[in-house]
Length: 212
Image 1 (tube, helix red, strand yellow):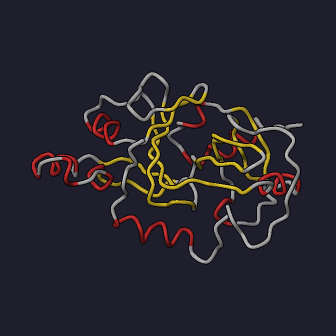
Image 2 (image 1 turned 180 degrees about the horizontal axis):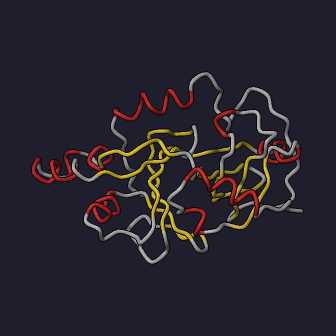
Image 3 (image 1 turned 135 degrees about the horizontal axis):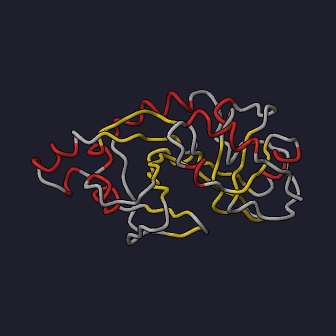
């Protein structure tokens, strides 16, 4: 799969967001929980007991979850509005095309503190590119073509451009869930692509349940 490279202009923004807190996927010590069942294809929702301020009131779409670990993308932490040109390798287009891309601004989201220069495009399933993977009623892509298509209004009907992801080592997420730091709900596309990011947590929390 061709990976999208992120230009350095975003490094300062991400670094400030992550400042002073160890990466959640590999802390020196963490309480391991017991794996019972995958939480893949669910919303993972932070509770008020969450102590890591990066994840306060977060909603995460979970893509993988097993005995070896888990990962997903935060969907309700906007970083800001940025020119789409900053996400695309300048060698892939002419100076004239690049000038046009600088005029197209898009919202960009923080997906988590792991690999913060990696770009994920979470989107509706009617669109497919060379890197698209389908996860039930939602899809994920990571190639330049989808960004070019979005810039030309030929991309997916609904999409989020997300930088970085959230990851956990084996037993780590289970330990956090045993301490009631997280609860679950079914993935809701209306919530995922809601234009008001600050209402996503409240809406998802209202739909939450405890998975047994």
